[in-house]
Image 1 (tube, helix red, strand yellow):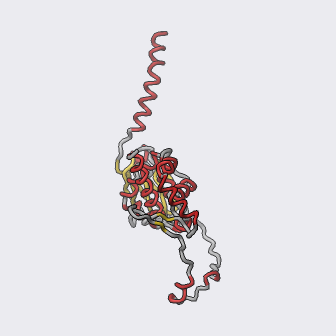
Image 2 (tube, rainbow, N blue to C red):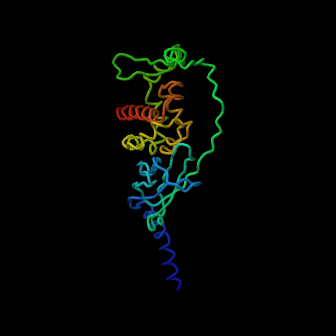
Image 3 (cartoon, helix red, strand yellow):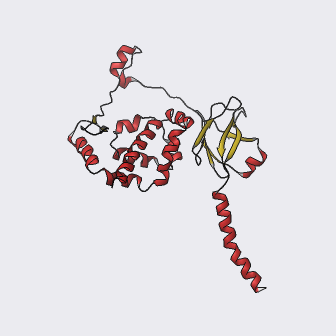
Length: 260
C-alpha cells in the first residue's frame, strides 16, 4: 500500500509538467465566429480582430463573421469605431461547438460644441491653411550617417541630445530594449500583417499597440523620447507611425549590439 502511494505521489509532478507542456503546444487552427451589436443583436461589419498571441489580424465580413488562426487560450482583441474594445480568450468549447458570437457594447457619445477660436478658421482653405499651427520640430543630420535625428526645437540642448545618442547609443538602447526582448520580437510580426497595419494606421490612442507589444503607454513614450523623436511627433503620429519609429530604433539597437 505504501509503495503504491509513493508511486502515485511520484507521478503527480509528471502529470503537472505534461499538462503545462500540452497547454504551451496547443495546435493552431482556423477559428471562426461572429461579432454582433450587444444591444441590437445585429452583425457588425469591418470589426478589426487581432490575435495577440499569434500576431494575426482580420476584419469581419458583412455578416459579422471572421476567421483567424488561433489556439486554445489565445486572446482575441476586438476594435470597432463607436464600440468598447474587448478581449476574449479562446476556449476548447468555442472550437468544439462553433457558432460563437462575440457581442460588442456601443459607447454613448455626448457631443459638445467645438470651439475653433484659437485658430480663427474661416472655412476658406487658402486662408485657414495659413492659420494652422506649424510643426516646429527639427531634424539634425551628420554627414556620413544614413539617418537624421528629430530633436524638437532649435536650441543647444536639442543638439546635445542628438550628439549624446550618436556618441553613446549602445548603452541608451540597451536600457530601452534589453529588458523587453519578448515584446520587441513581435515588432517584425506586426509589421508583416497588413490587417494589423491598416488598423494601426487608423488609431491614435496607442491602445491596440500597447496590447500587441504588452507595453505601457509610458514605456512607448520613453522609448521614443530616448530615440530622439520630438514631443510633437509622439503626440500627433498615428499608431502605425509609432510602430515604425520603435521598429527603426530597435533595428539600430540590434546592429550596435551585434558589433560590440
